Length: 220
Image 1 (cartoon, rainbow, N blue to C red):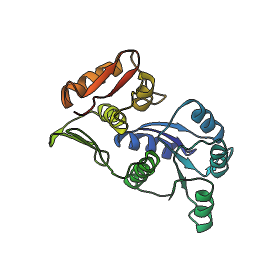
Image 2 (image 1 turned 90 degrees about the horizontal axis):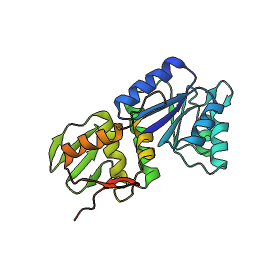
Image 3 (image 1 turned 90 degrees about the vertical axis):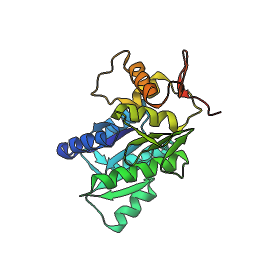
Image 4 (image 1 turned 135 degrees about the vertical axis):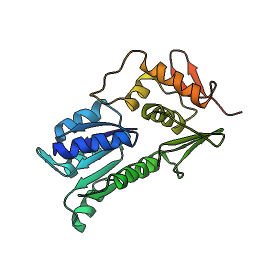
């Protein structure tokens, strides 16, 4: 999944980008409310990690503006302020969760999985489609009960397809899931990932719809 981190501490921001990449997420980082609003107006994110104290304003005020615009992107507030009134204020402003600094990266990743799972209406923590099972917690995949080793981008691609298996995902949508702003995308990169993925999970598991995109093949 693709995450937007809004954090003005460069050390923490770089740590989150690197850490979330290891958890299978493509991550974009901005440092201000203005840049966050610009990013959200042009890119669809699975979730936002939002610091409350930003150089050009309050993350809570930014959150209120997003919700007034009917932006339902899941938001996890991240702040050094952990007083009850701060938590209540952030949640009432539209936050989906709240995490105080310092925090553990595993907990942050788990909370992000939880809020994105709720947003998509899923109760289960894993995806299943036919004989394929995908586990977001440990980035593992099994086919007919046998473990399959995927690269980070192969896992992210399969996750995006299995999240809504009957829905056609366009090239642009899938590239948005796989790559952040700072990553170059070669013209045939998606096709290469699809090819490798098919070799690992089954040649017929992913269906190509010419001119439209890709989806998981219907289970018979």
